[in-house]
Every structure is written in structure tokens, then in C-alpha cells.
Length: 166
Image (tube, rainbow, N blue to C red; front, top):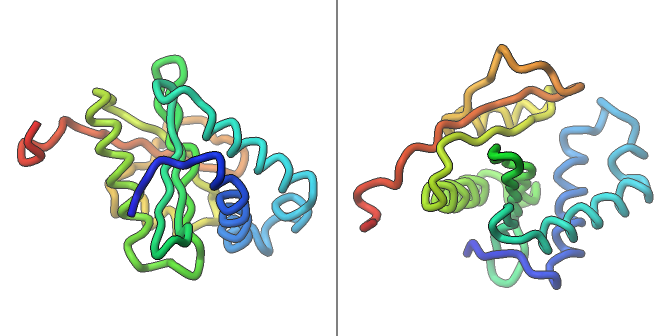
């Protein structure tokens, strides 16, 4: 089930975020940078702000199975540009369709809002995420300046499919 995040989800979202990030940062950056106390607090604050955001400016979606949070996605529109800021699946739920379901839910929201193009930044060593995004139609923007150790990807959203009844 995909649903809008609630404030009560904050602890579970932050914990899932930390577990997922550890899988691709481990061995590439110091552990303190992704699991240290200051980073965990920053993560909680970031998710709290995202959950509280005005829906016209973005949103947070949760994937849930049997009452357990299995994935989370967040997006934001600022200055006319929409960014998929986060998409994480709990590692114990990888390869079960959770990421694809979250991505599809985001696409539906963007299409209904008339958003034609979305960007994201993906960590250069996170090859699993890069492969996932490629299968979803995201393309590397070779002209975009690098954002530190992240690559910029773009997705042309396209119109609402005719079969959706709209």
C-alpha cells in the first residue's frame, strides 16, 4: 500500500533512510557522515520538514506492507523545478516491487499536477539505484554540473495515460 506520510511515521522513516543509505555509503565515506548522531538528527529534521511541507510544494509517500514501513519517497517543487529528493526501500524489502510502486505513485501525482520534467541526484557509487532509475526511464544529464559525488538525472514525465480514465 502506498500512502501519504504522517508525522507519526517520522521515526520509522528516519530509521529506514539510515539503513538504506548505509548500503551504498559504506566503504565510500566515513560512517559518522551517514550514521553519526549529528547526521541522524539532521535526517530526522529533514524528514519532519518534508512531511510538514505544503502539498503544493511537494510530498512524502510511504510504502507499507502488513503495517510495516517498507519504503519512502519525497519530492519537492521549488522555483518551477520538481525534484525527486529521496526514494529509499528498506534493504530487507529490495527486489519486491516497493521502489517501482513508490515511483509509479510519484509519477501519477506529477502527471496530475501537470509536471512535465523531474530531476534527481544519485550518489555516483550507488549503482543499484542508477540501474533502477534507468529502468524507470531516467536519463543522465551529461551537461549538468556535478553536484559533488552525485550525478544528475532527468525524467520526462509525459501526460496522464488515456487508460487512466482522466
